[in-house]
Length: 287
Length: 287
Image (cartoon, rainbow over all chains, first blue to last red; front, side, top):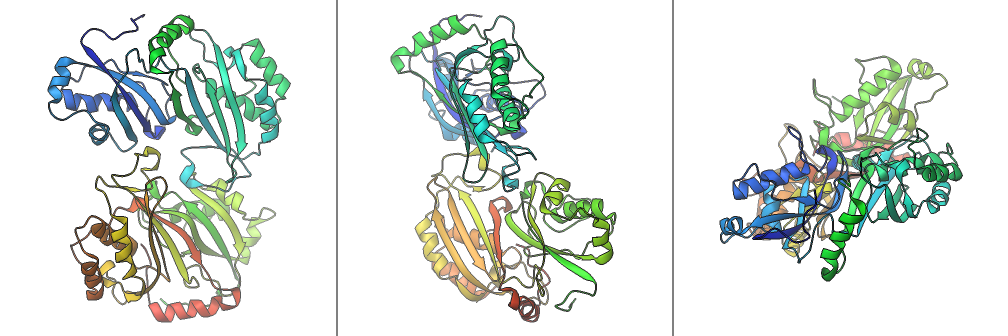
């Protein structure tokens, strides 16, 4: 479903930056009968515009799965002149949208988007973090919704050595839930693993985009290395095979957090969007 | 219900240090049909000892209300020789108790208590923190379970000035839910208010003990000052009156966190317990 890089006539595009606690959401994308992030925003916008069957052209940078958090997410919506007129003297500010959404959503900003901006296709990078609490960590019950807890001890040095062989422009088919007509080649720019001062293991990743389940499968593979169930060479072979394996698991969603989305300078937004569409042919970038 | 400072014959007392996320608990103290912190520990101990109607002499330093968190709580249990015998070769370690309790409880340590130790009566101090996110804060949906959110802006300087007149050995009857036969005199040793680097307002309190609702009523009074609904002099007058008022509210529980309990050196534990019993005659120190 190709669309022109520009915005259909008469529509104004708004960029919305926000955050959410994924615990009580069945993911980002709307689903009938389920509480989702998109669903809550559509309810909020319906309160403003009185159009409950409209999706306002909403598109998101990183479509997260159930239970995954976002401390910084980006989306856009398109509003017609008629809709803007209906706002009257009360603009659609971050504060107004915040007051219309529940407390597990936080709205940072609502701004008229620069020409050529597309929240998903203009993005040049996504950054995620995954937190693990292992046997070396002090229990922290106020963080259990935000980290994966394991009773085992992970060897962070082994994990770090394994990570080095995964960074770069590669086929991550072994770490992706397959999707017809989509490439699994991604540029993994960063894969850093660190034991923080409080004992928790933080895995920080950045790529042009991640295919579905990719972050959680990479963390699963690295955890298997950290538990000495898998050598780094075996993990690298699995990556090269581009075939999914049962040698490690896709880890639980609650440890995962989308921390940022990057965009090029305004002048390159339209070109970047066109490039992404041609190159990836992706219909989904959920993680 | 007075008890001797010592432990009834044949029992061994264990000190347990732990934490919990109060969100999904109906408070610390067990209540029929409700999920409570004590209830979860009693379920865990029943799994070990097979005694589902036993409360194991469990006593806690700070009995928290529904929704209140504890990043460091202390309690004790008393085990008989027969019960200890039933443990066999598997001692009751923090790890074992952790595995028997849900993920919103974290067990730091289980240790044989020194002579004269009583989790509640030997304690010489309790420290609490209360977090507020006001209009000057960036929204933080991953913290909504741990702070009070208000759409208003609080003047921290005014709050700090008001706090100075509340510190000391005073009658806090105006801030306490009354309880027959209990004194409302407390020594409030610390009442510090600070806007943190992330914008949140943290109120840090320490006292010998707090009476029921005292922290949340103090924070309510200070918030009214911060909102300029009440002057510091009016708040001080209310304190001196020792009579409850409708001029401020008892704030919501989710911003409150018990962060620590202090005890005297081992040699003074028994004396301290006796002193507390005689002085306060308290049957409850919930906050």
